Length: 245
Image 1 (cartoon, rainbow, N blue to C red):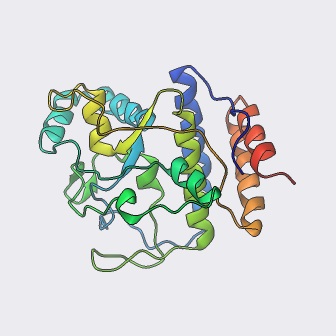
Image 2: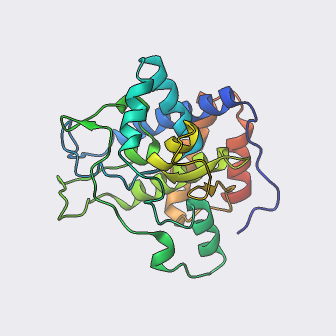
Image 3: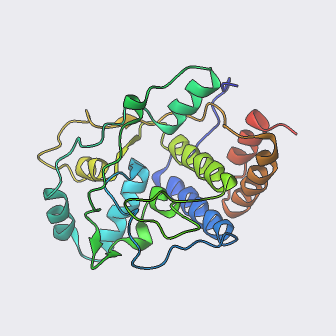
């Protein structure tokens, strides 16, 4: 099911940030129902494989500037060359390919880089309050390590994917997706990243990869998002386009 009419998104950056804040808040409350083993200091998932949008990068920059750590951020980024991410497809592009019954090869999806995240300090995230959704959505029923995969409920994974699609959609009027450090290099106009060749243009939602029993869960979350964000139209349009009752 491919979108026929673009679902509207806010044009102003401040409105986009308000919407992202609503997404973070609704997700944080929803995820509390799962007995996750994740605790402060368990950082096996804190790697350089985290992807995000340029909007999420703006949130990080706001946080860093607000704490007077502009030079600190530049020093962090100086230790990581841009372009390490091998991803060649965004989440919404992947969803569109699946909905059109097109195969996506593993090389296009990219690999996992287990290099520790540059923002880890003493095994704790130094930008925790502003961390992107890719970090917020990690979770496991068991304590994971570099040698063992995380374990999560299928509905947890489904909601993660849907919310990632929404965040990309909000950026689809000129924003980008890529590895976290690549996005930040671009936003601070790093001299070693003066081109956008490592960034993927964000795409609008083409549809959602949901099982029938998952639709009502996502609908309920969209209604909560509409209640938290003043412009309820966007989430109603997403339901009407892709999750008709």
